Length: 423
Image (tube, rainbow, N blue to C red; front, top):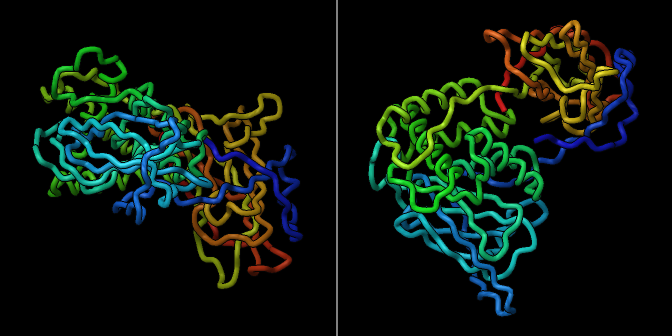
């Protein structure tokens, strides 16, 4: 999932000698405005009045299950999405989960675009430990591109993470929602994160369940094991809140899961497989790190009133890692190098891969308004560093000047550092 480049007009300041350094076609990226989307932590309130069901003959009934262990007695609200945001004034439906987590809701009106289901309250039996009556202390959400009569929808910690992935990218559009559901599903080896409604993996698979549902059930067992492994002295209910918050932050900030999380998931896969708790699920294979996002940050002493207007740097890619680029010119493909955070507005990037040398030269210009120290760009890469080898970062030049000024000059003492996350 990538932020799409769009064109914009830069201000009138010129950062001398930075643009000619790389003879490639210029990519001008005006990053997508981050809009509030699937925020976790605390429930939402229903509108002041509950609308009556549609009387126009176009009723839409949806069904599915809320599973973190099956959630019993959870309240479900269905919201429309308007202008890329959850429209809390447009409640489309209300419902309650049964003891097995299942629900059926007839919507008040037929939605015309994406919708978000939110579940609050209720209790569940933890899959990995068998602990009963665990209260659900954090809302769980599922975002879907569209719904029609008879749609099956799962609401799980994994759909919630996909929702947070969309929030990190930008607006809740149908394309981004579908993309996030596919990405999180692929990580946990599930083909359809929404329609393949899972069941309690500690029980035999119900008659007629698909292999994808069995994988989904086992994935939730593994997720439960991950929460148990990370909980320390916390109660399970609080540990779920903490684990989800940590994973949400990784998705929003890095575009993927960290190597630490991937190792933790693989440990949970092994632990759950040997626990004897799995009955009906199809056990997962270990997760293999096949790519990631390099999160780049500028650090150092920046004089008061000074902003950064341009960064020219070279990444040395470790063995096993490459980036998508034009094979003839070496120019990176759109979405590989993306300005983020304060550098997102009015930035121009140029990047060229030297495949033989294993280096990626990147120039980022931000004429106005400039940006402060901190995160400034993401680089999406393919592969995995052999033997955990590190990336190299060499600063060629960093320019800056006074905020709102018309000129800039080289800055000293400023460095570029990185962290990376798996896709």
